[in-house]
Length: 296
Image (tube, rainbow, N blue to C red; front, side, top):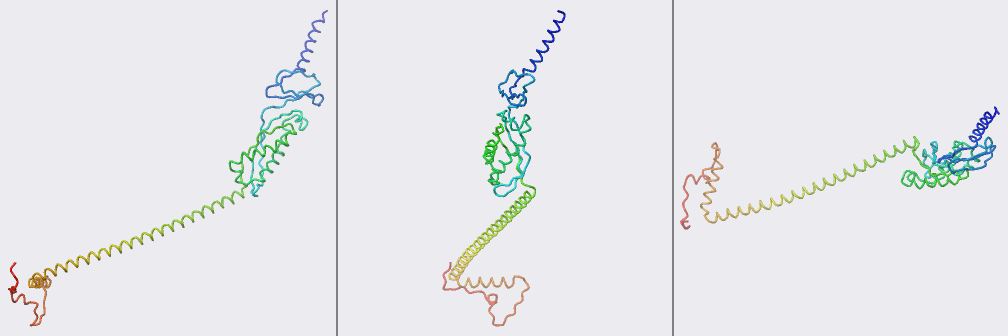
């Protein structure tokens, strides 16, 4: 009777150990594969408390959330024979733990080598038919969809569903980058030279038009000036003629006085005249009025 408490305590300990070895919990983000001596027996996807055979069955847990895997950067030849360094990543989830376990084993890292090979192949196949401008444009989303579909079709055999494939960075190789930069620089220099040539041509055309317009305006101005000068001279001649016709004697005297003024204006003029010269007759003899002309 004295051994009864000890036996009871031992029984409780054995029950506790068996319960701990038999019961396990599946979390909301987990899915479980039960194996017995390495052989798959059951897949559990429902969260909660579950039971297994202790010490015989093993619980292998797999993440059911969306997982990321970054693929190392690699060089890809495009459809236009351009070379591109592509750095991409893949998002996937384990949808069939049994098939996954049979394909790559119990650890998630086992799928990375297969994922790298499959996605890299799909990447090369799809990009090998595309032009560089398509890869760098808004059409990239459609290209990524094609890569995802091809990779997903191959990865289904591993119990994995590929949700998305994205290019994080797409760069040209260093030697190609330098060549493109040189070509871009040459193109910009060509455009600059063309712009300068077009500017010089426009400037020459504007100068020629301005010079032609200047010549026309000057010619028109000279012609107008000559016309006005001729009109003025004609009016002056008419005035002189009218004045002469009104009083020829007075006009003759007035013209003679003007000649005297011009000849003796300086005060030091010297004239050499012959005895019969009539230039100074008006100084010798006063003019006689014309008796035939009525008084004004």
